[in-house]
Amino acid sequence: MGTTSIGNAYRWPAWANAVILLLSSWLSITALTLQARPDAEIVAVVFPPWWNAEQTLSAAASAQAAFVRATAIPAVLVVRPDAEAGLTRLRDAGAWFAIDPRAVAACLPLKG
Image 1 (tube, rainbow, N blue to C red):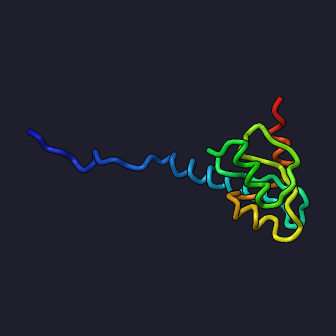
Image 2 (cartoon, one colour; image 1 turned 120 degrees about the vertical axis):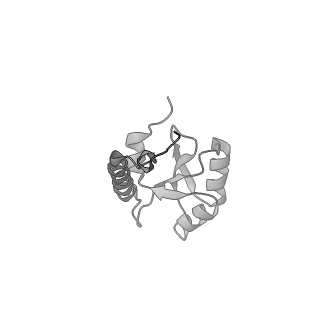
Image 3 (cartoon, rainbow, N blue to C red; image 1 turned 180 degrees about the horizontal axis):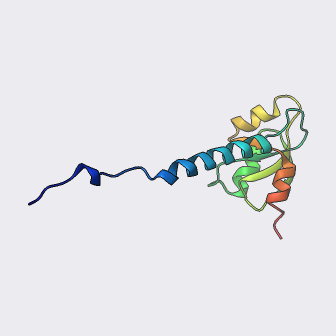
């Protein structure tokens, strides 16, 4: 009367594998494309998204990076890091990573 079959167990959908592969390859290509060159004088730095503009500016200033411009997202700044260990100081100040500012200019224009 109350029999259960093993065939009704939850299965991973077949299309989920393709979606995971597509997303992981897209993220990998994006990360490689947006990566800042080691010899770049100007970089865009990404701080935690919950930081406001004041926190990001003070973190960049504490790392002795010169402010170049802001973006539409307050957690992303375009700065000129100090020549000696500037990116290391930015990471110590809270920056997650540095990306090519030309890519940021294409995706995140100035606030109007």
